[in-house]
Image 1 (tube, rainbow, N blue to C red):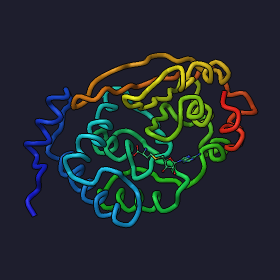
Image 2: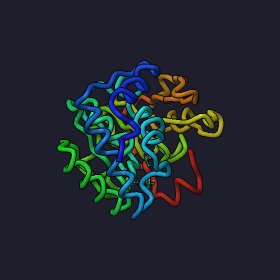
Image 3: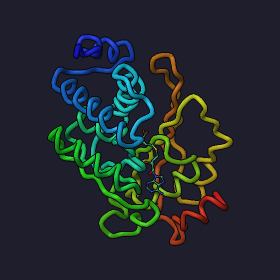
Image 4: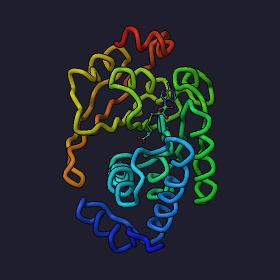
Length: 235
Ligand code: SAH
């Protein structure tokens, strides 16, 4: 089969979105794209199933984070099939990344992908609201990143206890982002955090948003609450 996304096409795609791609990272991203496509026959790890779409909708999105998540311990909350964690690990191997998802089948796929690609990235199965209170995970992360997992207030509540003080949640939102519905600021003020930046940018003609929430003090003991409670009465 001819690869419709050869190195030159991917390099051009990245360059016109002001991102860099080297040959070594390309080889791994290409291999990961094929793993995603193969796995999507078995389970829903991605809604987009062609190479060009995977590059444009998953890899560019993740690559944009390389300019924001610059070092330290990074947690990907609700990683699904490994987005953004796996592309981020490929593009910046110095990051210490942990992927977290409550679905075992997804985490098994992530573990398989990580070993096939030779990455040093951990994949953990569990619920965010429970793992956040375990000593191994509590207050251990410099960054928490997340795409398509929960709305702003819920995500902030699920993420904060994982962060070190001064650590930062980076929420990835698409064109439908509506600040008043997401309630990042409302949640942040209750949780000892502050919304630091909201950045709007465009990738392949689509408007995207990154919301950075900085943790300023210890998380109040009652948060995160049980999942049903968070859903029933969001902050
Ligand atoms: N980040 C990926 C997947 C998004 S789908 C992407 O952008 O493609 C959201 C994922 O979050 C699902 O895989 C779901 O299992 C996981 N999830 C939802 N609530 C969770 C929770 N409380 N703890 C851990 N994982 C959760």
